[in-house]
Amino acid sequence: MKRFKLKNLDKHSEHVILTLEPENQQDNIDFTPGQYIAIGFENGRRYSPMRCFSIASSPYEGNIQIAMRATGAYTRKLTRLIKDSTLLIQGPFGEFTVKPECKNIVMLAAGVGITPFMSIIKQLTRDASPTNIYLIYASRHNNDVPFLDELKKLSASNPRLKVLHIVNKGQNNPAENIFIGRIDENLINRITNGSYGGRQWMLCGPPKFMSDITKILKNNAVDDSHIQSESFQQGSIFEQGATYKSAINTYAITFLVLVVGIVGVALKDLSHYFEKISKSQAPSIQPVNTPATQNSPANYQSDDEQENRGGDDNYNQNSNYSQYSAPATTTQTTTQTYQAPSTKVS
Image 1 (cartoon, helix red, strand yellow):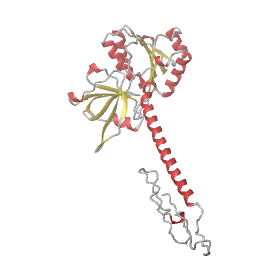
Image 2: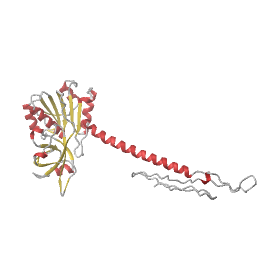
Image 3: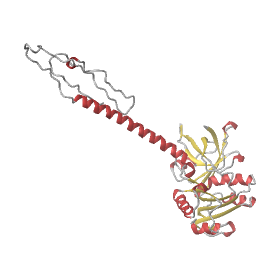
């Protein structure tokens, strides 16, 4: 767990950008552009639950920058923090990062889904990477596009970076590459000239946006290995996407093992239960009292009737699911009727 201070809080009409710096050198975080962190803050006398946010800054900047829409109770409290407030950070997490072999990347973002792309673009620009980047970025309004000015500066310094802004409302602004519309198949076809191969596709945004874009790529024969996606869902304890299936699979396997264990214990208990029931329903055995004659010895009893039919047949399962315990029983070697033991499943 690392400790950071709130250095700056930049509020916009539809989003907020927080800049955090480590309290000391030991608290610095070594991350790869595109990853995310879990954040908690002081809430009264205790710390809040942890929530995850993608990192917008790059490792060379020395601080951590995140962006969010303050639409929920958690994010609203987070944006009301004062300067120098202490935050706890865990991470980094995630695999939404650029593969070294990628030379042509198409980034598609919606809203604050731009956050991980900012980290990646900054680092590739600083490194003078030969990677070609085409960013298609959907926002609500042309008057409030997160990181607009920073993207303009990055485009000016990186000849391999092209940025196209698509907005739902407002006005077209060709000088800043801002156009009213939506990201759909027709738009992607115009940008790529209908050529979907030879590119790495990186997607980040709300679930509906992710689903629509993925369907377009699938319809144009883009292989799964060339699609990286991260569903941006604020308020979740973790973010999930195609690149994070390993984490989801871990939870699924754990759940499956638990279910199999419960079923196994239940079947074993049922087996012992029916075994005891079967024994308890065995026919009663009564000694036959035959009068003494010259040809038959008096008071004859078989060896079986003299056998002790009780025994140590108790079953105890060390779990919270069930416990079976049956009392031992003994058959008297007298002429009274054998009484079957009662059973109890607790």
